[in-house]
Length: 271
Image (cartoon, rainbow, N blue to C red; front, top):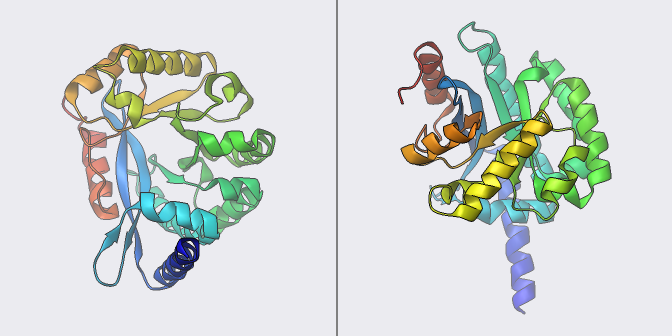
């Protein structure tokens, strides 16, 4: 009985998500990403927000797994990509914002069905956007579930010029050993490890290892969830290239983020 109720709830939620896609229930917030060497922003990550008609906001941790299981995630991904390309088209039309990158999170389902390179190529062309300023983030767990298929798809994306980041790095099982097989250009260190950076020797060692590994593979690193000055200082000391988190900037509306990026591209952030 409980299982039947769960399935019903899941399909109801899937239906609600589909409706929301058609009726403006989803929106994007952008969180800036900053280069640590000179405190200048390089762009942002697009974060999905879902608001119900009654004004309640649903946490992505609640709805994304259901979207994955029901397949609605494919439609959501397409919506996010379309919105992100609208932002990039606006950015690329102005000299002050033309060099900013925007990253979107992509479901592993889009990697495993192989349709992503064609989808992105078509959408970038239609939007008149240079794909080199678009980045995709895929979680490590997904990439390693079918590493061979992932490698083929990522190679095609790379040929297109799209940036590829491995998200939540360190939380999967494969990690270090198979990283060199994937044609990615950036690793995002999961905020779990960043959170323990100043108080856990283990977490600090993991961050150091990831940085060393990335360096040897010619990859860049973005530390996620940076929420204090001492963590920022520590990451700089370890040679981490980029960071994002509340200490630098909270997620904000597209317009606010564009303004934030413009101001700080000219005048670097203090600290």
